[in-house]
Length: 209
Image (cartoon, rainbow, N blue to C red):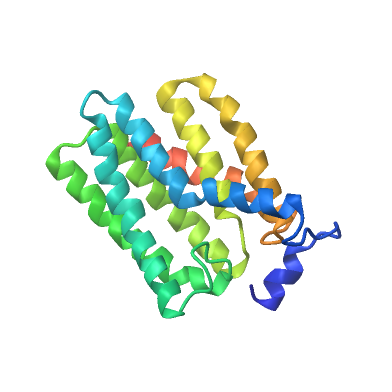
């Protein structure tokens, strides 16, 4: 984490060290609910709703939008270009986000050509929307993609499966706690993520759906 980002991330609370249960729990939550994992689950959940072959369509969408960019990030970590797969250092996010945007645009075209369900294509459009809105923000200020993608996933699942999915919002709070506990974000950064991402994803999702 760069010095400015580290300074932004501390809100005056006692910092959890790697030996405390709070730190270990926050680390587990951060990994389980990482943006790539949530995006993967979102594609599968939306695809499942589309019928018997929906999971296959969801997996195809996830392969283009999630697995491809993660391969680039992991490769960058192995090569030493990035500090970690969460891209904790803000400056490291720009290139992977641009690559993700290109892959998503290609994915939207591919899914439409092969006749994927409209909801799966709409999730692709939603992911593109969040990159276009949150990408420029994170270049200047380390807004939380963890809480942003989580909030967007809850909103889209509620549109697809019904308002009962809104109960999953408790996970967004849990993720926010984990990110601030690890001092990867300030409270303001984790709070800003969900409303920005929800707006950025639900608008294109509804337009394409």
